[in-house]
Amino acid sequence: MPTSRSKAAAPSLTEGPIAKTLFVFSLPILLGNVLQTLNGSINSIWVGRLLGETALAATSNANFLMFFLISAIFGISMASVILLGQNLGAQRIQEAKKVVGTSTSFFFILSIITGVLGILFSPLILELLNTPEEAMDMAVIYTRIMFAGTPFMFGFNLIMAVMRGAGDSKTPFYFLLLSTVLDIGLNPLLIRGYGPFPEMGIAGSATAALIAQFVSLILLLAYLYGKQYFLRITRDELHLLRMNWRIVKLTIQKGIPMGLNMVIVSLSNLLLIHIVNGYGTEATAAFGIANQISSYVQMPALAIGGAATSMAAQNIGARRWDRVGRITGVGIGFNVMLTGALVLILLLFNRETVSLFLSGDAGAIEIGMHINNLTLWSFIIFGIFNVMAGVVRSAGAVMVPMIISFIALMIIRIPLASVLGNYYGLDAVWWSFPASFAMAALLNALYYKFGGWRKAKLLEQASGASPA
Image 1 (tube, one colour):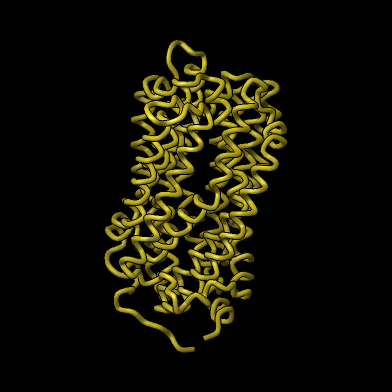
Image 2 (spheres, rainbow, N blue to C red):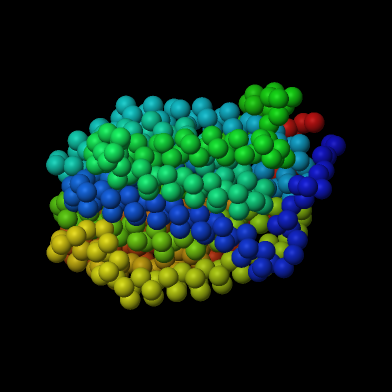
C-alpha cells in the first residue's frame, strides 16, 4: 500500500528523551484540565452564591447526567484518536485524514442524537436520580439547555482531541482558554442580568456554556483553515466526509468498550448521587463541592495519562516498543509526584477551599471537608492505574480495561456505598473511593505485566479498513 509522508507532519512524539517529551506535551493538557475544572468550579461558585444551595444541588445532578449521556459515545472519538496516532506514527498521513473525515461525520450524527435524547428525557432521568424535589425544576432547565449545545461541545472537543493525537497540545489549550474566559465572564451577566444582558437565573449559567463552546468552535475552525493545518479536510477532499463504513466498524469495535468504560464510571457516579440524595440537599451540595475539588486532584493523572496514550499510540505505530515501556514508567512517576503534592496542598487548606463554594456556616462545608479527608489521597492510586490503562488502550486492547473498571466500580464501589451505608452512613460512600481505586490499580498492573495487550493489531486492521 502506498503511504503519504509529510515532513511538516513528522510525529514528534516518537523522538527525543521520554521524560522531557512527555512533560512538554502533557503540560498544555494539564493546564487545559485546570481551565476546564476552574471553569466548572467558578461557575459553581457563581451559582451557589447568586442562587443558593438548591441551585447548586440542581447543577450537580444535571452535570452528572450530562457526563453519563456524553460518555456513551465518547469512546468512539477516543478510538478514532488512537487510530489517528498510530497512522501518524507510521507516517501514513492520507490514512490519518480518512480517519478524521469519517470520524467527523459519524461523531456529528451521534452528537445530534445524544442532544435530542438528553432534551427529551432529562426530566425522567433526573427523577430516577432521586433529585431533590426543590431542585427539580432548575435541574431540568439547566440540563435541557446544556444538551442543546451538545453538537458544539462535541465538535470542539473532537477537534482538540485530534490535534493532541497528532502531537499538538498547545493550540487546543489556547482555544480552551478562550472558551473558559467566555464562559466564566458570561455566567454572572446572564444569571443576574447585568447591563444589556437578560436575567435568566439558572438558565443563564447553561446558556453561557453554550455560547462559549459555539464561539470557540467557530474560531478554532477558522484558525485551522487559515493556517492550512495538515489534517484539515480541503474542498477537494470533501469526499472524505462520507463515512467509510470499515473505519466506522473499526472505531465502533474499539470505541464501544471505551465508551462503556466511561459509562461505567459515570453510572457509578449517578448511583452514588442517588445514594447521597437520600441524605438531603446539604449532602448533595457537599458531594458536588467535593467532586469539584477532586477534579483538580485528578488533573495530573488525566493530563499525563492522556499524553502517555497519544505518545504510546504514535510509538506503537512506529514500532518503537522500547519507548512504550519507558513512557509508562515515566508517566507513573510524574503522576505520583504531582498528584501527591496537590493532595497535600488541598488538605492543608481544606476549609478555605470548601468555603469558596458556599457562604456562611452551611452544614455542607463540614460534610465537604470530611469527604476530602477520606478520599483525596486515594487519587494518587487513580493516577497510577490511569497511565497503565491508557497505554494498554493505545495498542487497541480495550476490553480488559473496561472489565476492570466494571469490577472496581460496580462490584466494589457501589455495594460498599449502598449496603454498608445502611450501617455506617455516608462514611461508607466516601471509603468506597480508595477501595475501588486500589482494586483497579491491582488488576491493571497484573494485566499490564502479564496480559497480551501488546499483540493487538489495530493498525493492521486499519490498513484493511481504508484501502488506498
